[in-house]
Length: 228
Picture: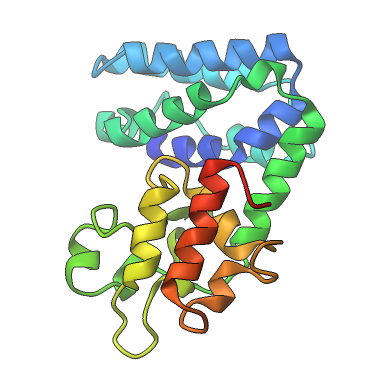
């Protein structure tokens, strides 16, 4: 397992980590991740920070899936390329850590967030190798929701694509940008795939079935805080 593999696991399991640790323990974990960023490309400092990350998570239950995988992670003998973290992956993990006041988040809420992610990943989706055209070159620039699956890698929910051409649907691209899907892909995916009182159905099921303006108005109502 490389450092980047570890970062993906941490990013995916953040709600579960918070649900299993006390606020003080979680704060220690946060600090270890920030030390990993501060280590830069100093291989020795990176190894030290990675040890701190693992130690901070020793309080996870032994039967916990992440705990078992962490026990398999050893950076000491790994070659430098496998030790140094990808800066973008590390930045994304830190962005998630800073986007929520995790230490004060109730464990029950964190567990719910984990369950929501698992539900969203059961929806039909395609991998990056199935993207075409501009979407393949720059999925984020194309306004696509990208969900990270710890087992399958990046997943792009199918409702975003025209079934005939395979190209992104313009209305989905527009609404994704309204929902800031580049910053909160899980929240945007939950809006599309969850029940919607105003539309009386999941918005994703209505793409191509109702006027685009109706979907756009529903998203606007959410952002405006009214109509629900």
